[in-house]
Amino acid sequence: RLPLPDLFSGLVNMVRVSVLADALKVMYNAEKRGKRQVLIRPVSKVVIKFLQVMMKHGYIGEFELIDDHRGGKIVVELN
Image (cartoon, rainbow, N blue to C red; front, top):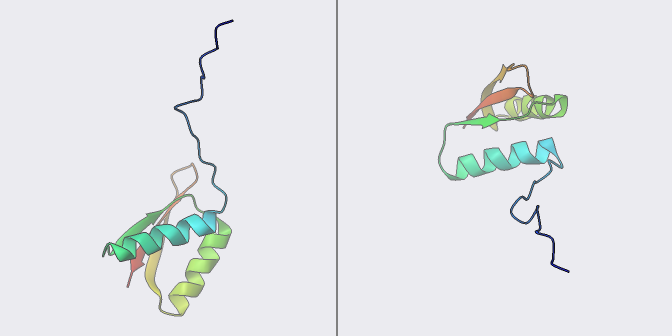
């Protein structure tokens, strides 16, 4: 028998485990690179509440929600 070609050998899909962890990693990496703004997607209620707490304590500047009728986006001003 001839082996069947592996259809998924080049396709590796990563699943999103934690939206909050992804948002924090995006902000951390952008800050390390010296960026002033960062785009976070998708939006969740947990991420919004966490950003409000970070803004209240002065870790980030203001942020803006963008409704794209998909997962949504947030633009965060970094300090």
